[in-house]
Every structure is written in C-alpha cells, then in structure tokens.
Image (cartoon, rainbow, N blue to C red; front, side):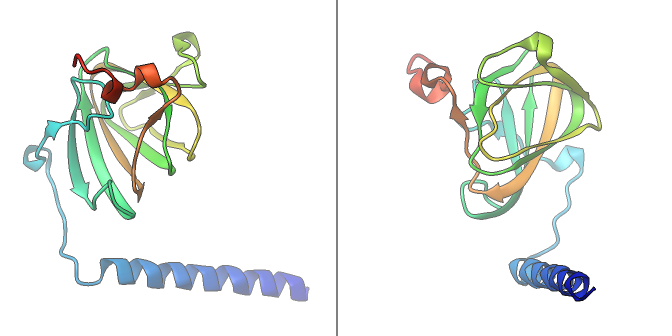
Length: 162
C-alpha cells in the first residue's frame, strides 16, 4: 500500500514540476493568436523539397524549446524517408497526409490522415509522406527541429541544381 502512495506522490510532484517549468517558459511572453488570413507564409526550409511553404506560429524551431509551425504543400508533394531529432506532433488542418513508416517508400502501406487527423512520430522513427490535395499541416514539438533523410541523395540540401 505504501508503494502506491509513493508512486502517486511522485506523479503529483511531476505534474507540479511540469507546471512550474511551463510557467517559467511562458512568463513575460505575450499572447499569440492567428486566424488563417493572418498566417504569414514563406518558402519552407531548404531541408524540405521545393514547393512547400512554412509559417512559424510560436517559438523558434531552430532552437531549444517549444515551437509550433505550419507547412503548406501542393497536391502530390512528397517527402522521402526521413526522421527527426525530437518527437514530431502533426495535425492535418486541410487536405490529406499520406504517411508511411520505414526506410523505403511503400505508398501501398501508407495511411491516409484526413483533415482533423493527428499523429505523433517519436524521435528517430523513419517515415515518409505525400500530400493529397493542397495540404496544410500544423507541427509542434520541442526544438531544435530538424530532418535527416535516410538516403543522403534524397536531401534537397545535397541537390545543387535546385
């Protein structure tokens, strides 16, 4: 019985510590609100294939700490097998994301995530993606965010002709 109380006490302490950390990270920051018409789109990072746009809503994905960003990509846009240094949380806001797991593209094994879907890829998990219709994804996580391609030849940063 004492073990249950100790475990419960540890869980409660963890919640309070998390709340204190969250408060200290947001202390002194201003309120952030976006409507779809106020999102400022720019070219996606060079680590992504050409054709996508990105918008950072909160934080700085290149630095340590929480971030939220959006990716807008055209129909048929593909991202080769890759992985991220941290957990990546994805919500489909528009269109559909075809997501597959593994180091090789197998679209027959991909799962269609339609508008409103949510997914979380743990750090280091290999996956690939394709967009169906113009697709807008919202990504959030703890930075720094990055993308490492399974095959270096798939990395747009290595293709000097683009």
